[in-house]
Image (cartoon, rainbow, N blue to C red; front, side, top):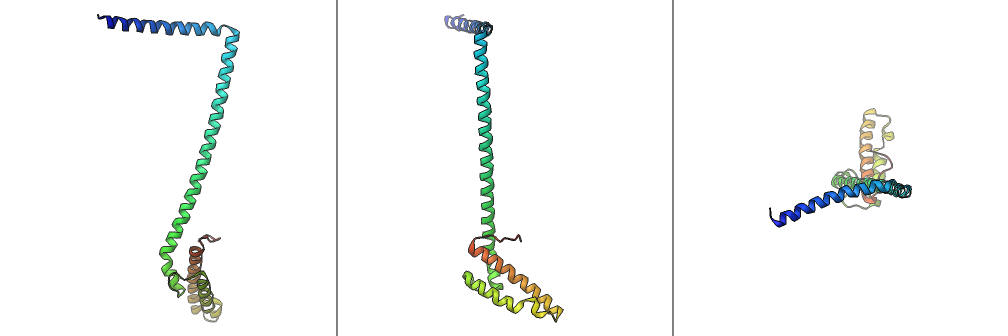
Length: 159
């Protein structure tokens, strides 16, 4: 066996002896009431620190979930606005307007068309009333979607 190997073996033996001696010293120290009381104090402080860290982590997690939910709601709103932009061509056509009309033009066209196609004007003819009702629903939907698109606000009612 080389000198280097013998030194390594001696170091391992010394480390084992130190570990055993360290454990024996720790056990002997815990027999002393003052040392045991101090160890208990440190353990209690460590437990309190763990609890405080856990509470902080739970609060951070709750804050992250709230932030994620907020971002998700904003993304959904942006998606609805994008969908409105895509379908706005049909809505402008329903109101008889060119794409890009202003909010005032949309309101004006909506009011004029509702005057012409309101179902109450055709109460005497059930078939005409039904057609007017369908047309009024299309006009209302177009107005609702275009005002939401142009103002950026969601409707108070769900579709």
